[in-house]
Image (cartoon, rainbow, N blue to C red; front, side):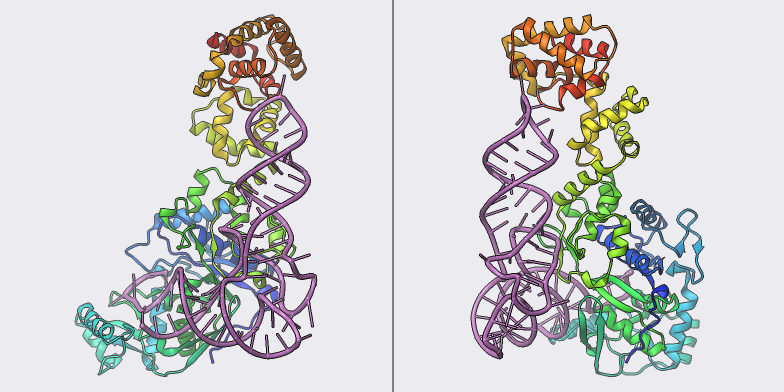
Length: 495
RNA sequence: GUCCCCAUCGUCUAGCGGCCUAGGACACUACCCUUUCACGGUAGAUACACCGGUUCAAAUCCGGUUGGGGACGCCA
């Protein structure tokens, strides 16, 4: 059986997140990263970031940097891996980018070659396609097996030196069952003939995922691997490699998928799926973290809003859900609004400001901390995401004031003009440039009397004269946030 | 096609043989609060995929069926 890394005393826990740098960090990947991170922190272990960039066609440095930004945004800091600022290796087991570990992989490939666990394969793509096609036609899985005659390594190397190309394939010789004791799914039994002779090193010299992954996990002394379910069957290949190479295997836990509303794997056509998308949509990283935590894991007491510290102290692999989870943005929205409200106002303002700037909203009054505090108190319960801030703060930006379409009915009322005239008179007669809540209430009462209007025929015209629409935040909160002069300009526009 | 994984309210989930006429959360509905909109409060509707077995007792254990997903790449 495969030797398993049993070096599991709490302080030795070493886990890794190993993304391939193609595009932004996906929410599924973020969840995998979170779970590994929490597991490391829970046991005082190390969290390692390893970049799996062996697919030269698709991997880019830019994607790596984007994913690093996303991980930083989520606050999932790693102990070893590319330095988050310089991208240079940090930690004793580097390089942490697989494209820079070719020599290491080659050494192990040679070891397999010498021990007869691997062979050079000179067959061309066309030949292999032909073989697969014939297998499919015969109703067999399209697995490549060894050619009739295996070229001995020394002879193969001579041919390669002369310019021929060959891949190195692992040779699956024995037919037997392999059992993974999966941390999420329990014992899973794989028959060895489930895989063919898989490629370890491509004919261009670049190693392949399963090969790198197994070697790196062993060399980086990884103790636990939490990864997506799609890798479950890869585990068989990796077990074969650990065994043939005499390396220690980590323990595995295969996480179920995050699905779209149609129960298909979450993808671009479901809308926002990358952390970057959610960032742009105004979600807080703490909310996104907390939400993805709960899609596939639950806390023992059923509490859902958990601080990072609580997440760490509660985290255990025993509470993973082995069934797939549908991603429900409605609940994320709710969670985001909870986090938004809980933020101290200074911090909330820091996060809101870029969204206002982006929307071209200018509120010079915000220089005043008391004003900010008041405004945020008024608006934060109406915000689900930071992207909701602009349309709220717009009401306080004089340059953006306009009478909205839904004020049409109010504009048509006979009483409105009388109310506006009385309201303007109140404003003009008001001594100071700001109006307190109590002052506003008194002013409103006097308008009621002088215009002889009450109820919604009083309220709504004033509201329209303040924010340009008949529905919105309470006036007694809004009015004190605006200068007398701008209130006068607004009511004049109504008149 | 072969192998593997999965199956509780619309959604996230609790449940690991009796505490379950199945609990919580989001969403939904109604009412209350509110001279608007939100916030908040209270109440309500809604689920063990199906069929067999094991057991005194099954959402829970076992088998099968159905359904969904994954793997079978010189992608990761």
